[in-house]
Image 1 (cartoon, rainbow, N blue to C red):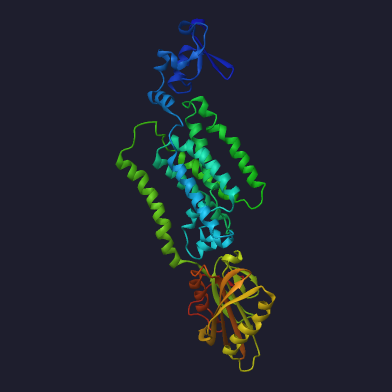
Image 2 (image 1 turned 135 degrees about the vertical axis):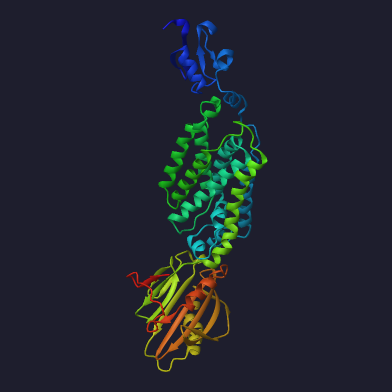
Length: 464
């Protein structure tokens, strides 16, 4: 190989020697960027200069790659990132203004809890949960990451593309969380992970054209940060790691096919509407209008046959048996709905009206005296019918361990059996009334089989 036809490339202190045709081929393929330093004696003598400074070599590079290298920067004000950060801060300070932050506060502002979605159809929580935070450290850390990497991604892509990345990251987080846990989850950390994934994909995909100072904060340079954050999550308690992974993968996957704003022609108005505005609008409409439809169609129920009680009734599929005859949605007290049924046999001439009065005014008095309950409103005792049995009901409002709670007690008599049906739900979740009413309406004695038999699952319950 003649020295005159040799090109020496130097990068990070390492030199590589190529013949001229191989060098030109790699420049045309974009494998060598215009910022690489080269020595080619016929043109540079013994000096190393950047490829872009040699006119004959610069012409070999793809024109859009040359433009991208010269025009890409982080100088644009990241308006959308700032709006996201300010929206999170606004909601945070609004919830703090109401007093001490409780589980009820977090739920009221949109936190995700599985039963509130599959019992009440509140699909909008899949988006709103990304804006709810517990304390200053929680929101501060998340917004630091979002601003740092969100600004970079927003500078790289067009505004509608960036909105798509944000939306995908948010929904990827809550959908992964919803699929793996019914627990209360909240926070913008999944969006932060989505932006990390987006920064990795963008930096790796366009590494050959990025100026070196930006390679230090994008692409492979972000991977150690992702690894550290994931390690911290998996070694800490109370972290929704599946949500984080969902946000990370969603942000990366959506970014992969996107084209940076400086790479290629600007899409026409029609293209922007069809490819971005309509899909984003469709997702937002599905979350809002879908919540209205799902609220009427959910929850799905399963039938329980309790031989001890001699009753069959339906409960939501996700509810759990806490103790004999007591079912609830397995959520904290602030958002717990429950249904309890019990029976006393061998009662001579049972009187449901007297039973309701005695239970609500005498039996509850012990708990009122202990301070676990605080009396608010006791409604009138009214006639009621449940499971084909005549009875009486009373609606009460109590403060249960500091949580305002609606309690409905129904007592009914059948032969010498006195049945009690007690349902509870937080005052702030009236949507559960429809679910509890459906449970009450499904009650029937076991000796009154329905017209269509339903196959048993083998554990005493049957799917509907």
